[in-house]
Length: 497
Image (cartoon, rainbow, N blue to C red):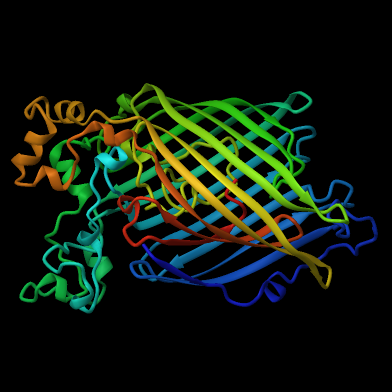
């Protein structure tokens, strides 16, 4: 879905920082910038517009304490606050704390986030096995500009309502030098339902006497893909409305990066397990022990300095990331299979695979399966460094290539047999029983499941004091099944990895 973001004001004004202490040091870091000391912050108000979400207004700030500057660009404390909402009820409310100094010799991260989403993306199971029909969800006020007016069904056909509540605490300690141990505890709460058509239509009432393609209000009688997956037995009643999932996490990391935000050199690798329990009693049912599950994750990131200027400042870095997430015991509910587990929560969203947090340019959550792997490759060009007042800025460009692939697909026939009590022996029979055309929703060859999803694009980075980074990425898919509009645009904070 195309989004147009307008950032109010320039960073020069928005990032006007407060310093609790005057800068007493004149030393410089590896980039030739004066070392920062004391408390610094940047405030970024923003306005966004989305064809379905409407206008967005909010504010975010990242507050850093650099102390006496001896560890710069590393910080002593980082406090991140964000609050944003749209006219059609998509919100971000988040607090995040990060420090390597609050507990001596340990890194501590705390996160509390609420993400209400009136239109969460849902394109079906197993990637390319689920056929994406571009015309079904693209409405235009001028019917002549629509691909086929008889094809259009609803702008929220590939959507469902999902509110996510996330509370987490993670800690890291040292085993030996760059080898670390990690542990975490938290809870993920999902509240799921069909899209609220009345709320999305607002004051506009659907008129059944007018063809649905000739009016913007949504037809409440059109079932979306999420509703059909429930009808066909692919989504069980015990997972259809979400649940609460407390989890425990443990693993190891190896980290030789020169810095965490936008590193120029080094390796980061991790491997960890996440055990998640399941409690759905909030929705009138007993605890669903069948959704207790254990997942394995591993990632490898490498940052290679390629070119330094005559002043010794790194100008080009080659960076890549490879990761995998598999379910190794128990059953994970469908809505948790697009949550990308991580040892430390640093971003708002951890959705995978597809979209600005994993495979840029691809439809969000396009790949939904029990297990998957992903890769991101990019060159990071630091085009210019400059100072405004006491603040150090830089502008960079990042061409990139992203990839996602399924490693553990759903057995769709097994799901139908399990959730319908064996009444329909195959998915095709279940789809036929509802009067739907199987070929419009699924391919007949399971080989399509394992075809890689690939995208490419370009990113723009505007950074302040090495840690506060505004990122704008434009990505396009290689295959139209991943986004028939051929482009997606993202504006967010920080590097992808």
